[in-house]
Amino acid sequence: MGHADWSLGTTQTIKSTVGWAKGWALLGLFPLLGAVVNLKPERIIRAVCVAGKHTAIFGVITFILYVAGLPGQLFISPLQILGGAGDNFFMVSLFGLSPETGVGCWQFFAPWASSVWFLNCIFVIFCLQEKDNVWRNWSIAGCVVMALLSQSRVGWAIFIMIIPLFLFTRQLKTPRLLLGLGFLLPIILLSGEPIYESVIDAFQQVKEARPASNRVRTALENLGVQRWRDEAPMWGHGKVESGPKLVEFISIGSHHTW
Image 1: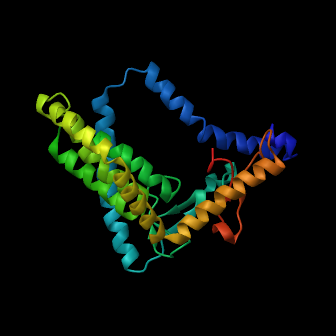
Image 2: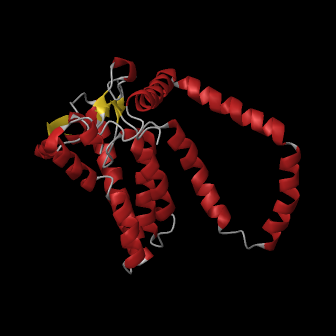
Image 3: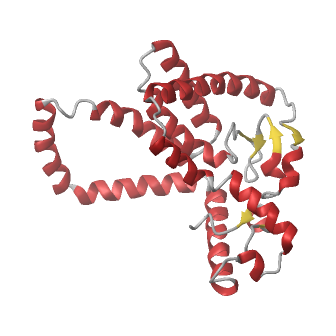
């Protein structure tokens, strides 16, 4: 409907449909497969561990190449003919460069570097359940490499919290721990305001560590909301567009806010 509303044509509609099918449609198909196919958790956990091991090796090798000053971008995939969000989406690369700082930024097997920390935080939950020590250690090392090289502050914060939380939940059936929580939680509730203020102060300090990143994200969100509200409130624009230098040429679309 967005394509028809903005007269983007049959060719662009077909290309966008293919792009939707190979991307967003999978978000619905994968949970459907998980519901109807008898998958053993051990196989999924091991598969994640295999990916984690390869990621650890790939990350170390490409970091050495980055330090050596070699270019990270290799070539643009011919699949670009199917359409997508610019050349960057189809660029086959060893590593990328942050548009804000100019330093190396790894996207690994994710479409964007910012997606890596999200995948990484999911991966580590799977990896901690691996029973084989060798695979578990390799995969956790891969998660650490992803957390480091994706350069996400939020990713690091969540990653650091996940491991103790995961180990903590295993002990929730212990009577001593439950009794301890019974004493600890009221104390936390009574001292909630200073704890809240300290968390907010720490969050603000993290935000100020990379002000350019926050500026770009805020501007991208404002642009997306403003263009949707003023230009296409019913069906949207139909496709994303490359943003201006203000947002470091990142594509403007509804996904950032939605």
